[in-house]
Image (cartoon, rainbow, N blue to C red):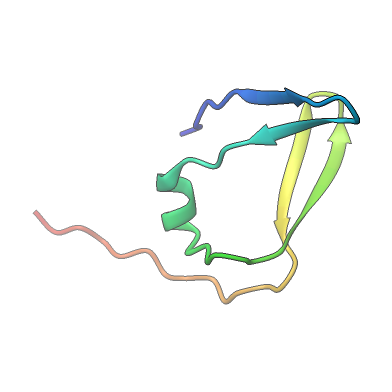
Length: 66
């Protein structure tokens, strides 16, 4: 499942910046902490990857028993 987000542009007299908001559900699932460092990787004009600089151990998914 993907999460759709929009890019925000802020124009200032001296420069401009673009901002991407990370959905809370994604941040919580990946256990992202405040101040953590990530790296943007440009694969092509349609694919932009966000990679955690300091790797974390993979977590095991739990099975839901109904």
